[in-house]
Structure formats: structure tokens, C-alpha cells
Amino acid sequence: MPKDLQSFLQQVRKQTGDLIEIERPVRPDDFEVTALLKQLEDRRQYPAVQFNNPLDMYGKPSAFPLLSNMYATRERCAVMLDVDPATPNYEVSLAFKEKAAGKIKPQTIAPESAPVRENVWQGKDADVGHLPIVKHFAQDIGPVLTMTHVMRSKQGHYNASFAKTFYKWDPHEMVVSIHTRDLSRIVKEYEIHDEPAPIINVIGHHPAFHLASLARNPWGAEDYETIGSFLGEPLRLTPSVTWGDKFMVPADADLIIEGEIPPGQRDVCDPFGEVGRLYQAQCLRPVFNTKAITFRHGAVLQDIFSGFRDCFALGAIPKEAAMEAALRARFPNLHAAHSPDSSCGIHAIYISVHNLQPGQADAIGKAALEAMPITECVVVVDSDIDVFHEPSVLWAVFTYADVAHGLSVMGTGQHVVSNQGTRLSFASTKWSGRVVVDATRPQNAPFPPRSEVPPEVIARVKLDDFLPKRGTVAGYANIPVGAK
Amino acid sequence: MERLFMAECPVCHQSFACHYDEMRHSKVKLFCPSCRHRFVPEEAASLDERPDAARASTD
Ligand SMILES: [Zn+2]
Image (cartoon, rainbow over all chains, first blue to last red; front, side):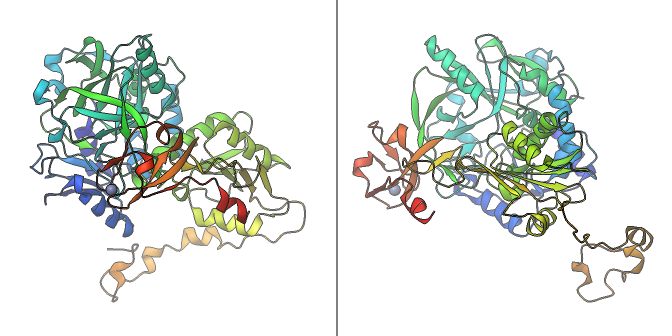
């Protein structure tokens, strides 16, 4: 069976078991979905959540369940990339790098065999208001569809990237917020020819499909082949309803909106609470005219809880993979890299190294900043500091970093760019100064070792053999470890 | 990178961020995300288009 969203959800039920289904009706356009996800996050609980009875934009029961929070744990991201969820940290970043470098050619199947063509709404019936579209945050301009969009360049290659399509209280006209280099270039290509640009919004597929759309491919790369590499099998394609074989669409998607961007037409877009937990400023973005909605029986609509843990891995994992790709050859003693949740998977990268050489912390930090222009802070630690355990990294910063000599500031080092006002990039702060923090253990003077419990004793004395059985001590059920 | 300004809706008085180059002088009506009122920046109850003065003065 080809990989799709349902096959993935079965895997989650078996491997991590953290998918919950909510039967009570919810109003996604009245913040009820994000209100519930926020309360889960406040409890530090991060299950994938499927809302089985959401209402649509008319306040009526929608035919489509709504799935969110899928990317909120690295364990589930591991399952997406065929990695053992017991090793969800740098192993996942390495798998992303390996898959991003691979290519598998797609396969074409007839529309009659394509699950996504089991139901077709066209013309007046193609009313996006029947979908359960989420309004996420108080100042968002409206409900928004957050998943992968695909366009085809004039040269013929397909580009898949995350973008956002905002519902505008119109059955057939939306506005699409495009912020990637390649999708923007394709829009311009069509505008030069004064032609409408075909675009599809793929709302629901195996999550590896969406992760693949975050791979940093050069212009001209065939993203459908990259997606095949992420799936580990050829992506099945079928002709679209609107453009036939001039625009092929993923056959095993749950739901696809086919649309066109009319040349030169723009509409007001944003604010939207973006990945960096700030509102993207109101701006003008291309109009998206809906042409058709196609979906499989039992289709589930996917969404991302932006600015919260559901989106941090989407920023972090590709960055960690990029660090591995950019640094390994020059710094073979690289141990691991991680972009922490506290930086929303954007602003900071923690890098650990084996056997640090003199001056290397600064060099590796600067190389990391060069490779990742959006990142503003790199902390370099020794390999005995787990970069995926932020308290340990901060311990190293507060204990080892010498602010007089261990900070390397690039740019002006001040928070003021110019007298032109606050500047943001993709709704995340973009100050002019960037910093490398050398938080490796000082080597140029006598320095006490870090205290440790002898590891051989930890290996010998097993906690579960010593803890009382569950239920024998008041309150013990709240201790998250121990024998049952 | 984008410069932005804050506009206060003349109807519901919610302030929201707007892209300076695209929205400040283009005659395009802003769209209040809270009450959906549309207005040009000159009709805003208030505009905050300061440069980074506050941050600069504390640095
Ligand atoms: Zn208002």
C-alpha cells in the first residue's frame, strides 16, 4: 500500500500511541481548536489531536475531521522519517539530511485509481467554506489553511513549500501568503506572461510529504522526487481536475484545493501569528481563486499550531540537517546540532563538538551562522553536554562562557538596525548583531571537572528495582517513572 | 526584512502590525483583524510609525 496519512496514523497508534481523538464538536474558526491545544501545551502534553466533529465556516458540521499537533514531538517526527522513536534527537536530523539528498522518481496513475479523485467538487460546488478552517490567534486576519502548496515553474519543475491560504468569507476567493524564494519566483514568471498561475494546496498527506517540502533544494530541483525520497517510495501522481496532465497532483493526498493566482492581483493578508510567536504584519499577497476541491473518502484536513511546539521541529530538523551538511567536512569532530524550542527552531543553534581544538569554537560558530542566515545565536559546547537538553546547555553557558573573551559578536552588536523602525523577517526578529557563545570547558587554565555520579554504578543500580510499586505510596502515581 | 507600523482601528481600537512599504502610502485600505473594518492609514485612531527610538535610547 502506498504511504498516506491513514497509514501513518496507524503507525502512530502502534509505535508512539499518542494520538487522541476528540468527538465533541468544535468551532475551528472561533479559536476553539487552538484554545484546546494551548491547554494541552500548558500541561506539557503534546499528543497529535484529531477533532472528529469540527464545524465548517457556516457553523455546520464539516465532512472532514481536523488533525493538528502532529509535529509536536520529535518521536512522531522520527516515525515520519523511518527512524526509531526511541532515538528522536540528532538521529532524526541525520535522517532528514540523508533523505533530502536523495531522489526517487514519481509514478503516474490514472485518475480513476487515484484516492484523491474519489470526490470532486468543481465550479460553484468548490466552496472552501465547507472545510473546518482554523483561526489560530486573536489578531489573525482570518481562518487559514497552513500546509504544503505546490506550483510548477515555466521550465516544468514542481516546487513544494509551506505557504498559507487565508479564508476571506468568500466561497471561491482566498489570499495566499507565499514567502519562499521559489514559489515567489514562479508567481512572477506567470505574471510576466500575464497568465494565471496554477497552484495547489495539499491539505493532508503522509507527514513525510510535508517534511520533504522543507528540504532546501536549489532552483530547478524536482521536489516531487525529493518527496519520494522522504517517503522511501515513488510519490504517486495523477492529472489534476483543472489542468489535466499539465499539472500533476499527489494521488494519495487526503484533500487538495486546486486554484489559480490571477496575474497582478493582490489582496490584504495577515496579521497571522507566525512560527516565531509574533504576528506577521499586514501586507498584500496574491489572490487564490479556487477551481476545484478533490478528496478521498474519509479525508482528514491537517493543520499546524504555529508558534507552538507543533511547528518548532519543522524549523529545527531542517536546520540541524543543514548544519551537518555545512560543517561535517570542515569540522569532523562535530558531534550534534540542535535548534531549541526556546528559539522557536529559528533563532538559535546549539552545537556540540568532540575534542575541541584551540580557536575552533569561534570558527565553527561563525561557519554555522554563515550557513544559516536566519540564525542569530550559536552556542558551542563540548560533546558531554547534550544539546537536546537545554538546561545542560545553559549550565555550560553560565559556568564556562567567559563574557570577556568567549563571546564573538558579528554585525554591529547593537539592537538598532537604523533609524527606519523595527524590522522583522518572516515575523521573527532580525537584529543586526549575531553572536557566537563559546561555552566549552576552559582549557587554558586549571579548571575543576564537572561533578558526575559514577556511570558504572548508574548502570548497576536500576531505579525500578528500588522504587516502591505503583499505588503503594500516596502520590506515587504522579511520578512518571517506576515499575507498574 | 520589513519595516512595520502599528495602526489603531477607528472602530474597535485594536492596534495591529502593518508592512510599511506595502501598506502605509499605497492607498490600500487596512483590514482590522478584530472587527473587519476597512480604513486607510490616515483614518486610523492612531499610528505608531516611530523609528527604533525607544530601543536606541536605552542601548
Ligand atoms: Zn476594528
